[in-house]
Length: 193
Image (cartoon, rainbow, N blue to C red; front, top):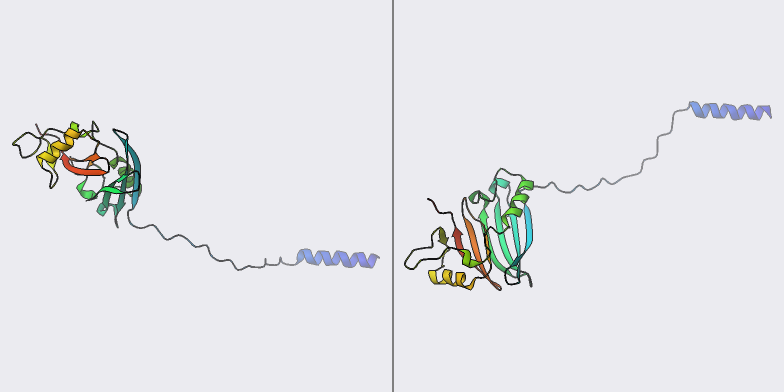
């Protein structure tokens, strides 16, 4: 019996002194990393509850290889049916009132959120300046292509919803809404004294 105990002790001593066994390796598949984010892309969206219980969706997107060269798109959609009522594209360098071309993607996302806020002091078209008879345009307002005095004054007289947003260094584009019709009237610019 002593002989057996001696052999057991010797076996334990040898096991304790021998180098550890390397753990068995299992083949692991490397995790797939998402592709790196490139370019300057962002989007924003909000609901707009206009006067007269009219509801619209205001969307904005930004796309470009670099933020300084990106192009921003603003879109007004009908709340029902997803119909696009108006869509305008602007290189952000042309809209410094809304965009800082030195921003990164996160800063541009914040700029987009601000861009889709209505800048009209009063959100009805009658707030816009009147177009005097015989004048080439209303004071402080540059009509969009195809907008005549009759069409402009018709929108003002209808007193429908008005959505304005920055479209330049000092100007705000103004869109008159009438149900599922949107009319880009032109750009409101502060008068110079």
